[in-house]
Amino acid sequence: MNITRWEPTAEFSNLARNMERFFDEVWGRPRQSRSEADSLRGAWIPAVNILEKKDAIEITVEMPGVDAKDVDVTIEDGVLALRGERHFEQASEGETYHRVESAFGAFERRFTLPPTVDSGKIDARFKNGVMTLHLPKREESKPRSVKVKVESN
Image (cartoon, rainbow, N blue to C red; front, side, top):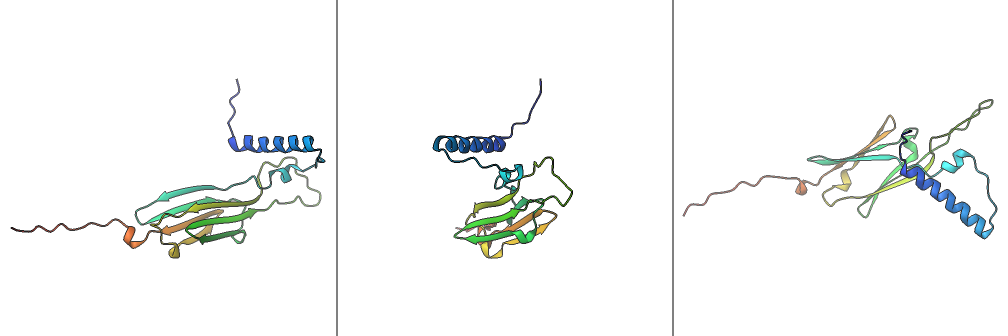
């Protein structure tokens, strides 16, 4: 018995291709031949980890093979948006890819910011294919202790 890892995103991608083929056959649209790399375009979404700390929220985004100049971070109406693209590296003269399993293309991730985040102080850093976003919490939203005063009768 072989054990295989279940990849739900791969199954969704296969389903999308099968649906496209079905509609092409039903409405008689001509089939277009696409290379393996072209069929993977737009199928890539970088992995994200979100960690809440006492004073801030930290988001790490894994983007191997992406240049920092190809990433755009915006904040609008309380939504943090990450947009970017991982480009396919064409084979040079005399080289041939025999298999391409890496996904390429444009991506977009959007996150609704909680009201505790001070969006004016968000910091983004990019190192070794990992972007780290530091979202500091507003001072008024940080936990604080209140001294209890004892009144005498």
